[in-house]
Length: 487
Ligand code: BG6
Image 1 (cartoon, rainbow, N blue to C red):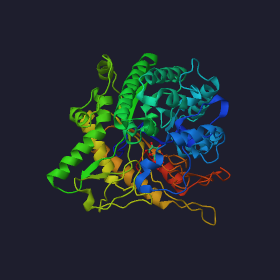
Image 2: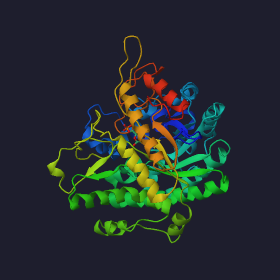
Image 3: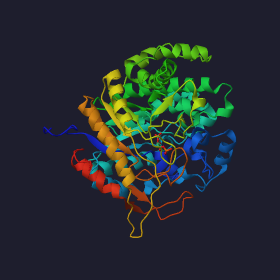
Image 4: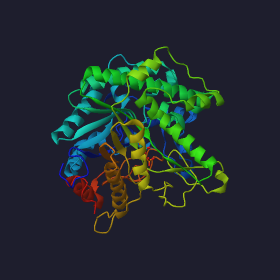
């Protein structure tokens, strides 16, 4: 590392997507239906209540299960990455990506989740994708479960609330880790594992109206995911000791609304409840705070005798997280206006600007989060999601001048740099998403995150042609200079 360089020499620059938002081809080559395939496109949206938007009821599922086409279900067609991956990866390579984060769609490998044998065509697809990445020297960063699971596991087992799902997941994890042991080194088990509590269908395949006590079912499901994640980590180390395994948290830091001790206490509690996920996965046990919370909410987690040891012995190698926004905690929310948000909505922070979707923009919060996580765990960190959802306009000459996106990245990467100067160990940074994909929360296409524009509208009309935005060349320069030139 030269004297002037802040970012480590082999810093993993790249971008990220998820299978269910990008691949499309929902019924191709033996793939089974997954939870994401159940989510219809709602024209009318309440951005302040996105969690409700993502919610899928028994009625919605019944209709989706009998719908054989992709029309009206954007996550079924995505941006057809399934057939465009070569072209897309060539563009990522042109930007200089060192890594590319993607997820494997569980239902391509085990269409029902409980099948005896994996689906060879599904395995072959990811072989092709990883080979294509390797051709350009791009290191895959693979999430095993990103907001989808086979629908059979939901309908016949009740999703992650059922302990049996652990063994199905471990079998799936073993299958892909064995198969790709020479092609993939970096693995994440569950994307934003805290989503299982915030939006149980998306995170845990739990159908809310089927549960008498949804909170209880969600925490039980989360426990099963913790155990499954630890068992997959154990198997990973046996399969290839070179593997690096990470957990993944949607880190939304809570600031107190005022300096009143009540607000400070509330913010501390909210942060502890968010960080409990990384506590379990990095420290190997539930934090003390959870005992009182479970008692007060009459939550009783059913554990097997060996669970505590499984969690203790198989902690992760690194911590990855998404960072989009910070939140405000207060004991008197009625005093403030509320903002929208992704899975959370929060009271307004008067110091921050918000996006069209109500997400509060807080680049400095990224530095705070990086320092806090490193202080707490002393493990390498990986920023695996960070980006701006915005509407893009095509100019008359065909160009897309997304200066707002450049500005967003400039500020966030600038704060990442500050955190590294503060002594934080950061392995890499993958922007969300590398290319425009379907929005997780709203299923829109017009909420665009990419450096590459995809010609498709909210109803799924368009040529699917790819086009570079202005930010494409900007990010290329950032990578080429290893984060030195952010101008
Ligand atoms: C994260 C998810 O919460 O946020 C992604 O891991 C998602 O899947 C991203 O796409 C942005 O959210 P949205 O709803 O704007 O797509």
